[in-house]
Image 1 (cartoon, helix red, strand yellow):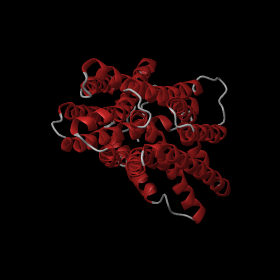
Image 2 (cartoon, helix red, strand yellow; image 1 turned 90 degrees about the horizontal axis):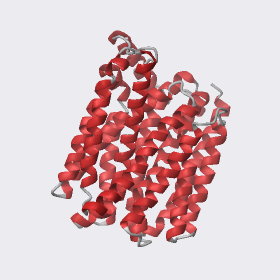
Image 3 (spheres, rainbow, N blue to C red; image 1 turned 30 degrees about the vertical axis):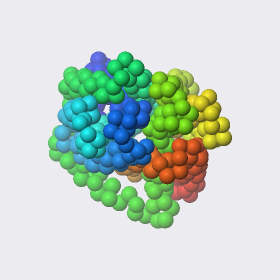
Image 4 (tube, rainbow, N blue to C red; image 1 turned 135 degrees about the vertical axis):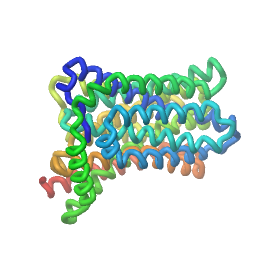
Length: 408
C-alpha cells in the first residue's frame, strides 16, 4: 500500500494532500447520494417499475468489487495520483452517459463505471487513512463524505425545481470529477515523494497477497472472527445506503411528499450523519470505540423502529434522521477496532476486505431492499431497516466475543 508521507513535501504538501483527499470523499458522497433522490424522476422518464433501481445498484456493486479488491495492487503499481485520476475520469464519463442517456439500457453500463470508480477511490483512500490513524481523524475524513451526501440531494432537488430535468445534476457531477482529477494532478509530487521504490512495493505486494490468501486460515475462532469482521461493514453499509437510496422513493410514493420535501428529507438524513461524524472528530478526549459501536447501533435501531411504527411523513423523516445520527460513528469505530481485535499484521489485509465488503454490502443490500420493496410494498422499508440494524448488532457482538477468545 502506498501512503503519503507527511514529511514528503513538508507540512504544506501534506496539507494539500489532505485537502485533495477530503475533496475526493466529498465527490464520492455526491455521486453516491444523487441516484436515489433522482430515481423517482428517472423511472418516470423511462416508464420503469420501482424495483428497476436494483439493476443499477447491482451493476454498481459489481463495478465496486472489480476495483476495491485489487486496490492495493493498483496503488502499489501506479501510485495514488494516477489511480485516483483514472477513477475520476471514469466517473466523469459515467456521469456524461447518465446525462445524455437516450434509453434506460445504457444506464447499467454507466453504473458499472461509477461503481468501479468509487471502489478505487473508496478502498484506496480508506486504506491509507485507516492505517495508524485515530478514530477522530477517521470521523473527520468520513465526515467529508457526509458533506457530499448532504449536497447530493440538495443538488438534485434544486436542479429539478429549476430545470425540470434529472439530467442536470449529472452535468454538475462531471465538473466536480474534472476538478477532482485536477486536484490529484496538483498534489502528485507530494504523494509520489513518499512512494516506496518499485522493488519494495512489489515485495510488499507479494507479501500482502500471500497473507491475504491465508486470511481464513488458523483455528475455528480465527476464521470465524475474520468472517465476522467482514460481515459487519457489509451489513452496516447496506443499512446506510438502503436508507439513502430508498428514502426518497418511500416518501414520495408512500407519504406523497413533493420532490422538494423528499430531497430535503434525504439531505437531513445525510446531514445528521455528517454532523455527528464531524462532532466525533472534535473532542480532545476521545470516546472509546468499544462504546461508540453499540451505542450508535442502538440509536439507529430506535430510528428504524420509528420509521416502522410511525408511518407518517413527520415520523418517517424523524426516523431517518435518527438512523443517520446513530450510524454515523459506527464505521470509523469498526475500522479502528480491527487491529485490536485481529492483531496489526492480519488487520492490514482484513481492512482491505472490509472496504470491499462495505461497498458490496452498501450497493448489494440496497439493491436487494429494492427487490423486496417491489414485492412487499414501500411500507416494508421500516421492518427491513429494523432487521438490518439487528443483524449489525448481532455481528458486532459476535465479533467482540470471538475477539476476546482470540486475544491477538
